[in-house]
Image (cartoon, rainbow, N blue to C red; front, side, top):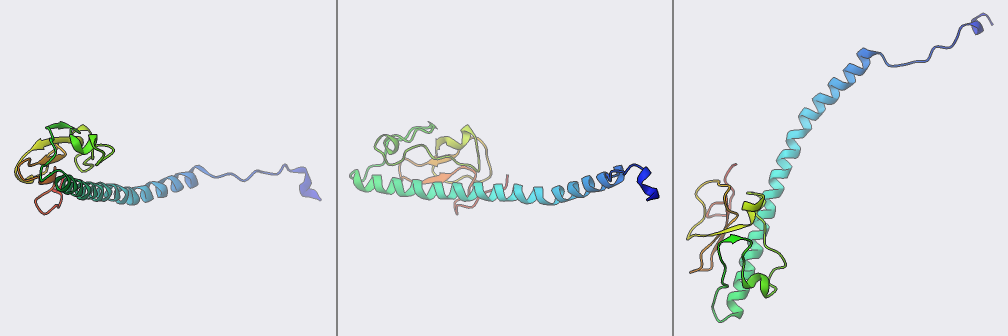
Length: 145
């Protein structure tokens, strides 16, 4: 055969083909990334609402078992008093909506927040035993960040 003398040429991608693939992948990433960020935000909201529900149940159980007394909770990071020491919870709850160390911080107050804040994760009313999640309103809905 006359063509046997020519070396076989390896097929490779051209620079233009590679650039087109990179651009397409960039466009797909730009579309998908915001959806992941939204899912993360929703997960933090749901997790905080779940922690709040559990916390309220623990306070109600403690109140019922302790002759209508609430635990001695102090303001600070994860200082839930007898709820921790008597086994009502294994570890302090974390408000993922606020995040970080402030998400574990307890302050005293008589109502829920009136806007988003990032200084505390929980508000406790020692007189009534009410507890609210920081950054959430009185209907347990989060304020926008």
